[in-house]
Figure 1: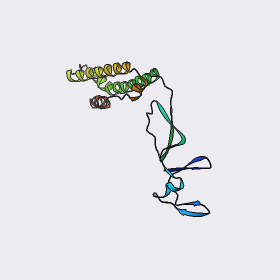
Figure 2: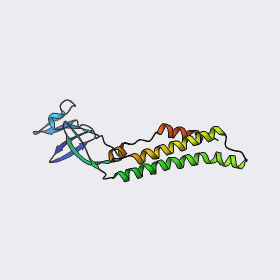
Figure 3: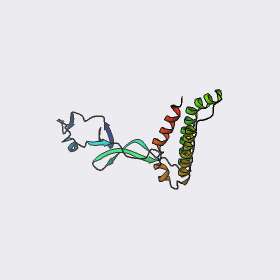
Figure 4: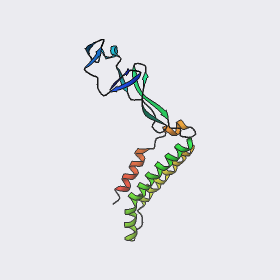
Length: 164
């Protein structure tokens, strides 16, 4: 994508036009000469979507144009709350995945096998570790950059899914 300033407004182009009207004549545009006629690449900004949002406003950024990025205005507690809710959704999923196996054991009057019980206890330990990590976050930046240990979470969910 490209953009250029026209009549004091930055206009977006999905692709570079083949020609542009300049000084009463049509000029063929190429990637090599488009900068001579005010066209610059429109690049996507890099930002943390937990703490910032991209607007539709296009701004000049050196040799490029990009979209303006604004803070979402979230506090540390806002972000920690979001992380806790996301963790809770993973935990609910885990519960739902393990419930049929637990129900089967109860219905057939069986006890939980030791290896399954150990794995479930490991998952409880993971839950506690993640909760402690979230509680220990002390800045908006840290909370915005926190990532869940998805490999461990997905491994646990897959284990529970495969029980039955």
